[in-house]
Amino acid sequence: MFINNFDPVAIQIFSIEIRWYSLAYIFGILLGWLYCKKLLIQDKNTSKLFDDLISYLIIGIILGGRLGYVIFYNAEYYLNNFFEILMIWQGGMSFHGGLIGVIVATIIFCKKHNTNKFVFLDLISVSAPIGIFFGRIANFINSELYGKETDILWSVVFAKVDGITRHPSQIYEALLEGLILFFIMLLLIIGLHSIKYSLMIMVSVTSGFIFLMGVLILLDIHLNLINVWIISLILFFGMNNAIQIIQRWKQEKNLDTVYRSTGKAIVFTTITIRRLDAISFADHVSFVVELSLSR
Image (cartoon, rainbow, N blue to C red; front, side):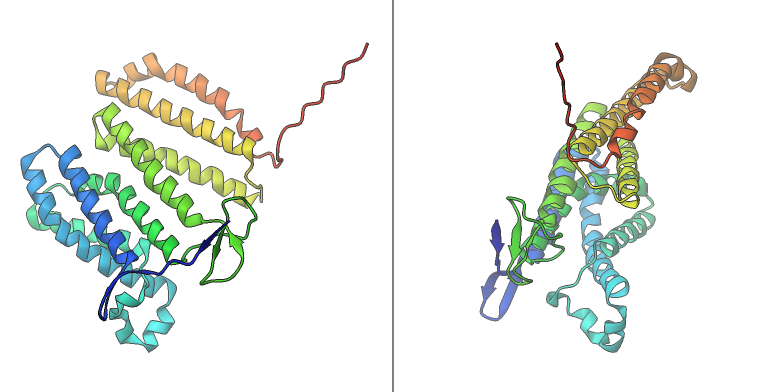
């Protein structure tokens, strides 16, 4: 068990406060920019435009994040206290609003410079896990978005909230949506030599994961070692199949040839792995196999 009693203020100079959440935004944007500039962007014109885009993105994140929080979470309060919308130092930012703000800012920028918006949206998408990682760490420090009650070994007591041991859901998201997603995307980009194809695979796999988790929630089935393993296996084969199809498509550029050379094997593999779906929905802690030996 860990007791979270962090101060949300990282640095204070006289009456000026610099909060961890502000630093998370700064590090996320800075490292995302460096990642794209140093590893992903090869065209000089795209590199120059990306530098100019950063200022648009910062405005989009701040305006979108703040307005998203106001509209989605606390509209009635801010209608009665309109000028408090400007007091972003008091907290209150929305990921969904920030996402919308980034998309709108990118579209406006690309329309102004008459350039392909999808190139820059792809770059933002693959660097987003960096910002998510730092954002969720800041949520943990601020004692926000905490999880349900639990007595597991790594449970956390958020002292500023209550004395209950809870799941550190912010850390889970920082690791899964941040670090792990970042490295999966990086490996795909290195292997496929394409941001576009890498995003296509991740969108497909993520959609499948969301669907499976949604079914588990609707059926009120709890996660356990067995269904976590099965779901991971299904998603792995889904990603593998997608990579095989894309690699063959890049070589042949002909759907009929891709199907004849790769399609049948993938269909049979998919049918086989799909039989594990029933096991993934089993609500049990573990399989117990009893062997009775009779003479």
